[in-house]
Image 1 (cartoon, rainbow, N blue to C red):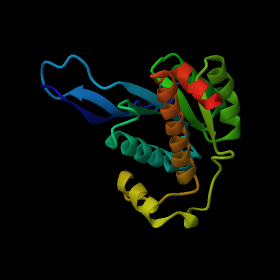
Image 2: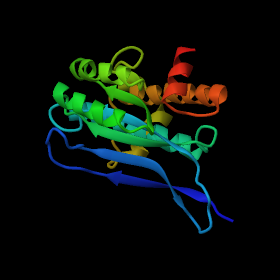
Image 3: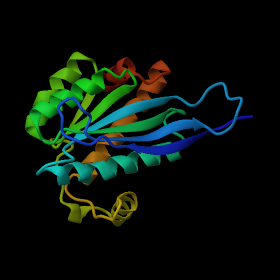
Image 4: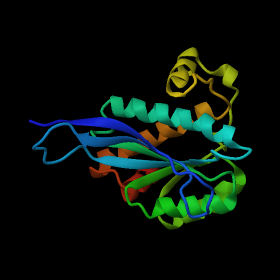
Length: 211
């Protein structure tokens, strides 16, 4: 008898070269817990792109901790119809050129079925056409319905949960709740894709979003 367990891995790539992925967090990868397993639960990847370096790094980390929280919650609940979610977080430095490079790196991985980002008008504009051309669902952060909100209006349970996933018990800022809301919207789309087509991939996700 075998079982699968969720592990958490953080893979960090340093430096600022254009073609290097500057920061990657991968959550929810499944490892075999015993021998004799023929298969593990399916995994889909969600890209989260934001500035994690430079003058706008606070924007990126504000949203990243919410992304970690949202992924943890869905996987602890068993995923979406048994499908687990892995988070791939990439840094675009708030730079349109880097944003284009990170978008191209995401579209070549067929396991990436959606992207949330880039949180700034210039970087969003540089990347969104690439996602569209490759039928990769993109939810633009920083604009309606995921625009910045006053963190003073956040409910206490959200603030507590956010602090639990941040490395230094940090408090959420203006982009924390919008990032979390984007993931909840995305999970609803995934659930509909699973219900309508029996699978979660780029095609079924786009069709579910448009239905």
